[in-house]
Image (tube, rainbow, N blue to C red; front, side, top):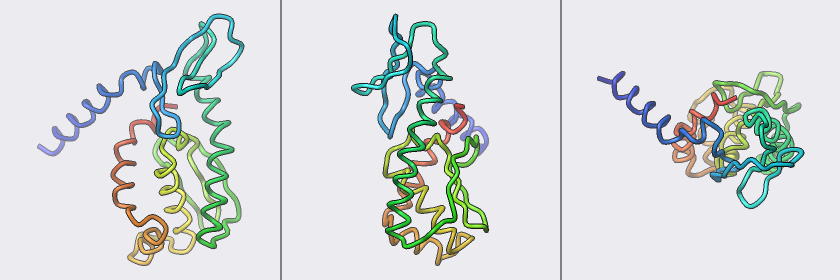
Length: 173
């Protein structure tokens, strides 16, 4: 029964997000955006919640490149702000392209953030970053760890639930 319920949930999520999975629409910072193709355009452009791509271009490739470029700016800015707020100093940060993790860290105090976070809302991005920064102090999910997260994100449990609902996005690229 549990397996059938999970299969039905996955099927429902995929059906509800068919346009996203086909790159007819996409998410950027938590907003659903249109994807249009325009004759004569040289590269990808983003304006007014619309991604404009050259006619005949590889949608997936261009959107991925846009996300990677934006992630370098946006995610690093958020990381810098949150490290300052939490008074934590990671050794460094690297962007990754994982199909299973939104973020991670290691014992050498490096933080790894999935470039696909750029699809999620700023609040969810911040939750993932705070979660990873808290691991630099507590390398587990103990009560102390969750207290560190809660000090910055008081409603972190709600953010966790929202993030779970976004997991289909992580497998897109």
